[in-house]
Amino acid sequence: MDEKLIRELIEMAADSRRYSYAPYSQYRVGAALLAEDGRVFTGCNIENAAYGPSMCAERTAIFKAVSENVRDFEAICVVGGKGDVPSDYSVPCGVCRQVMAEFCDSSFRIIVAKDTEHFNIYTLGELLPKSFGPDNLTSG
Image 1 (tube, rainbow, N blue to C red):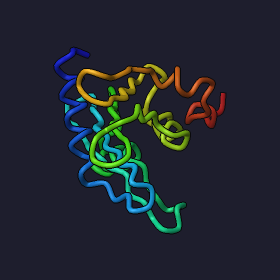
Image 2 (image 1 turned 90 degrees about the horizontal axis):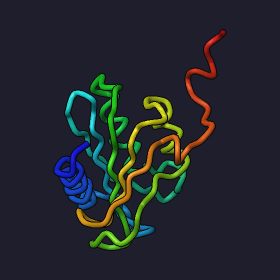
Image 3 (image 1 turned 180 degrees about the vertical axis):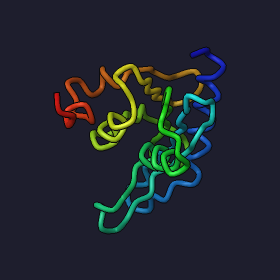
């Protein structure tokens, strides 16, 4: 993945934060999911007063893609933080990592960024070692 594409994904994820619905935490997150066919699906976090029904930006992007019959992914970029300016490296939560494991192998890249100059890249295998996935449910 080249530097230009990484920066584009960071900008798209950062832009998606503006659609965030985060009245309780004020922690706004945007995600940009790169499909293997080159399409990008964006998402934002959507909170709920009951907390449980809240949805992370990463899952929003993945579910949008899957609802369009896209299931092969190369990378996801996540940008987040309190208020209007990204301030943290927003690493995906455990639930999002498990959803990623449903559709992606351990080499799937996860870019966490504050901006186009400050980012880290991990693999799903690094963030979710020894994961449980579809292969665990197939008979030998």
